[in-house]
Length: 250
Length: 182
Image (cartoon, helix red, strand yellow):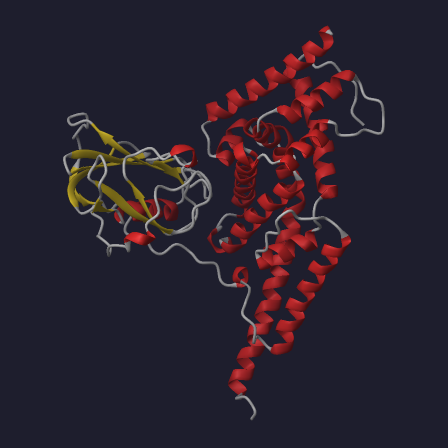
C-alpha cells in the first residue's frame, strides 16, 4: 500500500515513484501473456495483430507448442526447424580492425539497395547515403549499433575543403577512391575522401566497453563502401553493407 | 522400403536437437520475461505493445545468443532492446486509440484503498510523461540502474539521461505543487 507523503526532496519523491512503478509493473505482469505463451510466440516468431488475452488463445498456444514438440519427435526431424531454433548467425569475419585500406566488394544490384537505415530496426542488407535528409524516419549520415552495445557510431558528412587536419593521416583507398585515414584519438577514427568534387568525412566513434568484434564489424561496414552515380546534388551515392540488424539511425 | 539406418539416426538426432533447443528457449524466456514485461509495460502503458517489444527483444537475444560472451552484459542488452522498442512503439503515429484508452487505465489505475491526493496526482503525472522520460524513470528508479548505466542501456549521452531525469522530476514536483495550491 502506498504511504501518504509529501515529497519535499528528490529522495522522497523517488521513493514514492518507485512504489507507484512497482505497483504498476506488477499490474502489467498480472495482465500479460503467460511465459508459456511467450515461449510459443518467440519459437514461432508469431506477432498476432490485436492480441486478445484469454484462455482460448493460451490453450491454443499450449497445444501448438505441444504439437510442435510431439510432431517433431514423431516424424523424427522430418519437419523444418523453426527459424529461431537454427544456429545463431554471427557476423561474417571483418578485415583487420586497423586496416585502413579496405578491399572493394562486388557491386550490389541497384534494386536491392535500401536508403539510409531507419531509426528503428533494420535488417542486414545493402544501404546507401546520398547526402540528403530523409525525414522523420531516419537521421541521414548518422547510425549506431543501437540494437547491439550502442557504443559505436558512424557519421558521414560533406565537409568544406581545407577544414580537415592532415596530421598523422595515411593514404588509403576508401569507397574506391584515394583518400586518407587517421586515428584522431583512442575513440575516434576518420576517413577523408574526395568524390565528384565533394569532400566526404567518415568518422567512427568507439565508446569504452566496445568489443573488438563490434569494432571489426564497423570497419567492415566502412570497408564495404563504394560509390554509384546518381542524379542528386552530389552526383553519386555511397553504398555499404550491414551484416547484422544491430544498426539504426535513432 | 526401409530407410537407411544412417538416415534414421540423422532424423533421431534432428528431433533430439529440436527438443533440446525448445527446452533451452523455454528456460531462457522464463528467466527474463517477468522482468522485461514489467519494464516494457512501464514505458508503453499498453499490454499488446509491451508484449511485442519483449518478444522482439527475446527473439533477437535468442538468435544472437552465441555472441554474448559476458553473461553480465545480457541483462542491459535485453533492457536496451526492450526499452528502445517500447519507446518506438509508443511514439508518434503509433499512438492508437487503444493506447489512448489504456493510457487512461494507467492514469486512473484503480486502488482498493483510499489514497492521498498526492499519490493520485503523482500517478496521473507519471502516466503523462513522454515515453523517453518514462524509460529513464523506469530504468533508473525501477530497474535500479545508475544514471551512467541508464545512459549505456539507452545508448544516449550521460547528460541526456541526467537532463531527462531532472525534467521528469521537475514536472512531477510541479504537478504536486499545483495540486497542493488548489
